[in-house]
Image (cartoon, rainbow, N blue to C red; front, side):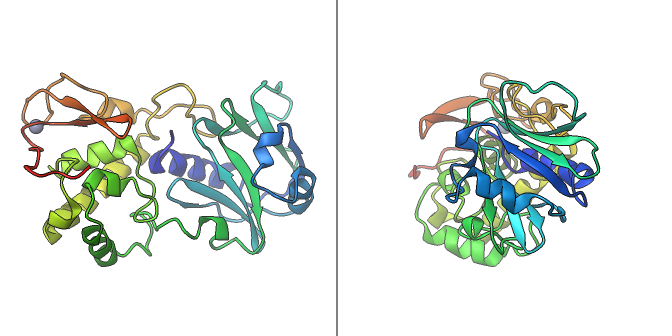
Length: 283
Ligand SMILES: [Zn+2]
């Protein structure tokens, strides 16, 4: 599932290839793609036709394409891709929507094998679509308030990893980057948020930002063939992962063997030496 660095990589690709261009024709090729747009697919197409795309925006894992005061929201779900290319290329069976532009140049296609992704229109949503307003700012946004985050985090009385995955507290972090950030900050994933010191939170936020910056630099993490850039390339941050998906391998910092533990139907990877398990953890 794409996390912030993957979505940011797509955002910057769209900024380069789509921003400033005008939608000519919008085709929705699968009923599920517009399921969150309650007025229906025809209404969505009509709302976008002839509109010029502004600067592409993102919060956490959500992307939106401003058109005037309004916006087109694109949620990639588990496997969604936004790909730009020659408008004459054949339509693959997983293309759910196709956007042609008034300049006749490369088109934009929303490709989604598993159909968890979706598109919707937000009237007046250019700055921040109302459907996204409940999502907390992500740590790369200028509006992210570290003191406020720290206060809300310590009031939660939950495990630190569970809190990092809570998009109403901080957005953009999923399983991969949570494990990597906790490793960098030397914090076990089950540490209770109420037992964290202010310096722990500062170190953790610093670690999240560092991991995000490195991952964006590498074009994100491509764990399967489904996550791609707008030009179809893959990211290569998976080569730089310290703990995620590496059970039994040596910790890059101390050499101890990385362990995998069950966590919320998924896994958590950590170093038993750098990230000692708390005596009384919280899940
Ligand atoms: Zn270690």
